Length: 207
Image (tube, rainbow, N blue to C red; front, top):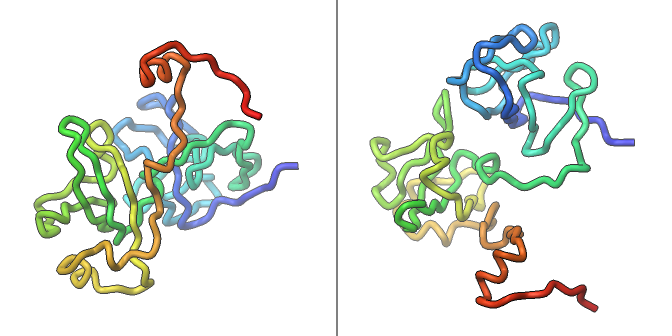
C-alpha cells in the first residue's frame, strides 16, 4: 500500500502541462499567465484550493507535482506519490532564498553566480558578480530557455550575514551543495554514445 501524504502550507507545487487557458478547474479558471509553480501559503479546505506565495489561487485539479514528486490526489488534500514513474529532480524546485546559484548561459556557455532573494511575489536571482544590484536580476521562473542551473550552494548557518559572504569568497561559507548537474545521471541512446566515442558500440551486461 502506498504511503498517503497531506498537502500543507510550505509545500512546493507545479501545475499540469495540459491545462487549457480560460477553462474551469474546480472553482478556479486557469490562465496561462499565472506562474506555473509556487509555494503554498494558504489552504482552503472548503473549496479544495490553495494560495501560493505569489498571490494566485489554484485548485487541486491543476496540480501535477508536489515537492518535485508527481502526485495523485485521492481525497481532499491527501495524495499519493506516483512512484512507478521515474522521477527527475528539477533544480528550480530546490532553490531557496539566500542560496548561491551557478547558472550557465545557454547561448554563450558562460557560468555566472547569482544569489536567490525572496520577494513578496516571487523568487528572484540577482547577479553576484555585479554586486547583487537589484537592477541586475531575473525571476527564477524566467530562466528557462536562457540559463541552465549547474549548482545550488547553501550557506552553512541558519542565520547569516549575506553581506559578509558577498564581500569575501562566498565558497568558504558553504557547507552543502544542494544540487550539482555534474552528478546527475545522464540519459543517452546508443546513437549518442556512438557519436561520443566515434565508432559503433555494442551494449553488453557487466559481470
